[in-house]
Image (cartoon, rainbow, N blue to C red; front, side, top):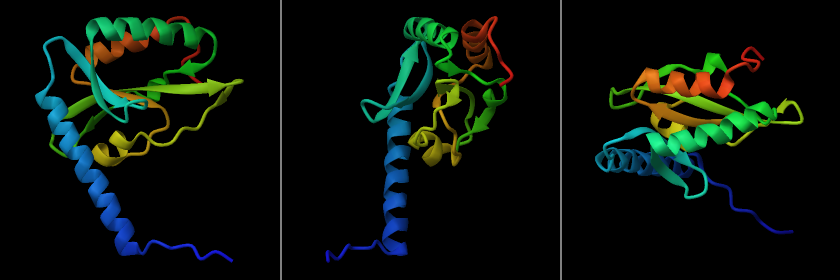
Length: 150
């Protein structure tokens, strides 16, 4: 029989604290590196870090989302279009891309940036906009003529 090491509460708390500190550092570095034209940021699943998208990049991404929404592979639920204040007092307007498979909500691991910086659990890919108008225009484009309620 193999003995498995069990993490103590204190070790788990320290590990979570270290993770949160890492995300906070990355958050401030990301904000310092923001370039003119960047309209939103989010956690990039492939590079395991935070990144900005400018208007051109978001335009290309929105077209992909629109196609996937038409195919029933994702939705942007209006009830997720909320404003949240981060730990540093900045207000962000969230856009949550919720994936679907075979007509059912696809459950994802929580977005670590949302958990660590906003202290929220949200299922989906989350993008943070400084301007509500930018977030709302993406939502309107992607979901135009599609089911927004379910």
